[in-house]
Image (cartoon, rainbow, N blue to C red; front, side, top):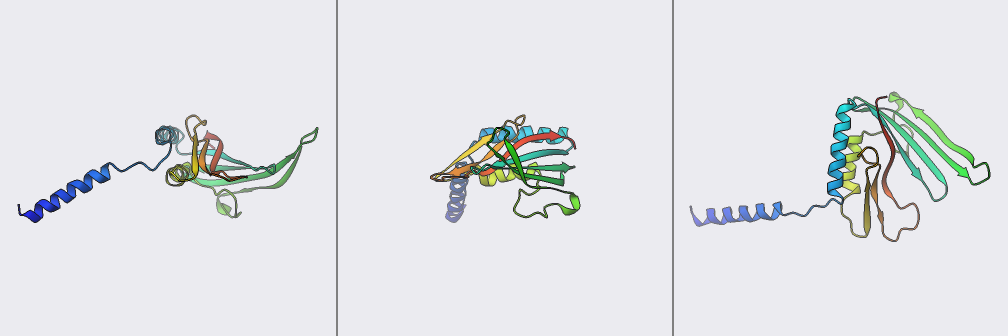
Length: 175
């Protein structure tokens, strides 16, 4: 080999070593991997047909629930409810908004949680919510039979409604 070939070979070896030692940029990696396995098992056993409910709660007392129905790996329905409960002896509930979209009208109500698959949620968890960030703390809970129940992050020094991510109340097989 000529000296230039040795230089190229050494450069290739050093590059391979440096890239193989690359730090992982995902928080809670082991828990995520276990949860992803639980998801893929559930997906197979349910024929990729299920519904799940995403919830939000604000410090103002407003809460929302969005239920997404997925059939054969495709979202086909989205239902939404926004309500507040007034602290009275009867805990009066006020419905602020409520609707259901079928497959033809899916995601036509803007500014709400979009109807997506759990595959898309797991992808966003891995590429956005669980990425290591300066000045933010990441969270991952897997209370839905090992699947994601809460995933996201909170930036430091944030006062109200700071969670960026998802809270999934339930994941149920079938339609």
